[in-house]
Amino acid sequence: MSGAGDLFDDDKDNAAFRTIGAVANALGIKPHVLRYWEEQFPMLKPVKRSGQRRYYRPEDVALLQTIDRLLNREGFTIKGAVRALRSGQAGEDAKPVAAAAVEGKTGGAPNAELAAKLRAIRGRLAEALV
Image (cartoon, rainbow, N blue to C red; front, side, top):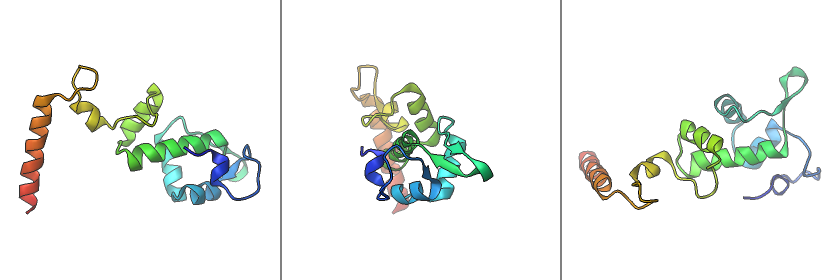
């Protein structure tokens, strides 16, 4: 994952605080989504100054990148992403809740019975859509 300094083309120091607009542009996420994520992810706490203006620290930007990856690329729910972040399992190899549910107790080997049931359900859903 790239560092916060790699995202911004504003000649500021990598440790500089960034406004919600600058962060939104750099990450390609709408500002209202960033504000919503602040409500859903208690560990995301940008600095608020006069007039409640938000200023994101580099560690806030890194957290937003992780949240974006979990939600938008890895398929986590908000609850699952919060759980992964709290447990420290939000690394690049984190698994969405649905994928983790298919795994058995054998350290990651698929539970064949559950996988077969899920494939059957997928097949029925596909037939219903035709």
